[in-house]
Image (cartoon, rainbow, N blue to C red; front, side, top):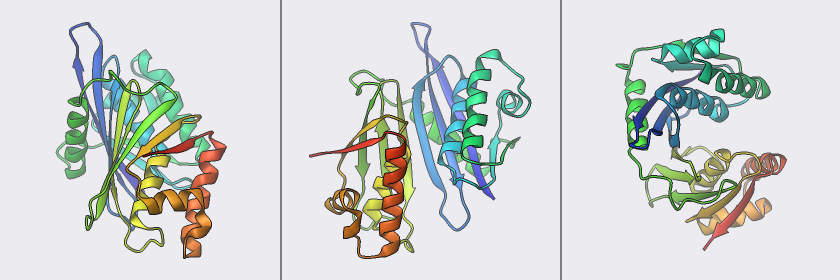
Length: 245
C-alpha cells in the first residue's frame, strides 16, 4: 500500500498573519522515498498540516489505496469524521474530493512524531517555513520552476514558487526507468502544477526540453508513452510548460 507521512510548522508574523511550512514523505512499493515540502501563508498550524494531506493525495498514484500518517488529531477528525475546527472543513472537503476524483481509497491515521519518516517530514516542514518570504515571486497563474540536478547524483531537487507559497520535491531517480533522469525531474515538476498554471521552467536539460516538445524522439517506446501521458495530463488540466533560457 502507498503511504505518506506528513507534518507542518507554523509561525505568527508581527502583522498578525502567519507563515507555515508542510513536509511530506511519500512511500510507494518498489520506489525510494520521495520527499516534498512547501511554504505558504496560512492562519494556523492545522491548516498547514491539512495542506500536507492534500498534497499527499495529489502526488500519490491514482487508483490505489493511500494511508496518510499524521500526529495531528484535528486533521484526522476533519478528514475522517467531518469534525474539528471550522476553518478546516472546506480544505478537508477538498482532500476528500481530490481522493474521489483520483479514485484513491484514503485512510488518515495517527502515528507519533518519533517515527523515522515522521521526523523527516517534520524537518522538511521546518525548513520550508524558514524559507524566504513571498515578495518578488511570479503572479498567481505563473509558477517559477527550478530544476537542480548534479551529474552522477541519484536524485534531483525541483522547486516551484508561486506568489503565496513554495513547493519543493526531492526526486529520486528510478534507475530501471526507460525515461532519462533529467526527464524524470521535469515530469516531477509538471506533476506539481495546479490547473490552468503556466510553468516557467529553468535549468531543464536539453534532452528534457527536446523530449517534452517531441516525445517521439525518445529511443524507447516506454519512455515515449510516459512522456506522452504526462503531456496529455497537462493539456487536460490547462497546464503550460515554458522553458526559460
